[in-house]
Length: 247
Image 1 (cartoon, rainbow, N blue to C red):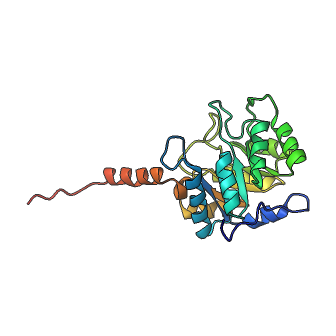
Image 2 (cartoon, one colour):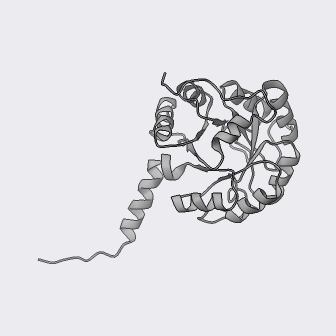
Image 3 (cartoon, rainbow, N blue to C red):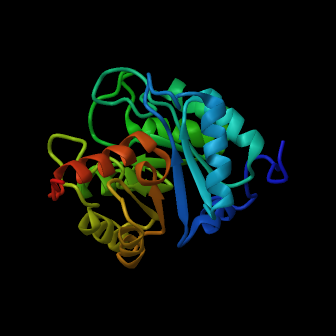
């Protein structure tokens, strides 16, 4: 237990403004590792989250029930929780049961796939949002890939919309850089906060997302995934021209 522990941030007023205000204009760090990787361990992810908090993160995004429980017990920062499960197209908190389990960990915001694709349990996104609100009182973040999905998610009751899946669906914009056009359009048109997430690899890109209108910025890989970071550097070194000196 650390000095950060206070339990989930909640509010008695509609919309839980304390949670959203705590991350307004701030950085949220995503602490996740892929299955089979050395860091794919709840204890390790909790320590990564604590290190991010020490560095100034205003919030944490994490996945997996045990990861979320440990991070919730260690930190009082706003916690965005999700559960990646299954091998279908929709795997970010894919069903209502997944969403309720995430809420049960104490996560302040439950992140759910907010695309228009069919879900394993046959429920609509709106039905999942309504059930999470009614049964747990938690906020719901819609992870979307396009403008149309963002609008539909807000209309379905999402409290927050994230650009997390831009470039990760067959019909959305791919590319190495963050989709700042999507961030700007959704921030301009939606009545709910928009969180910029996805392919944000530099401090400059994070700042540009805020300038584009994002309520907050989520950065994961560029901070918490040493395997990818090492690959970026290793590939750059390998491609660099080298002068071979002969004695």
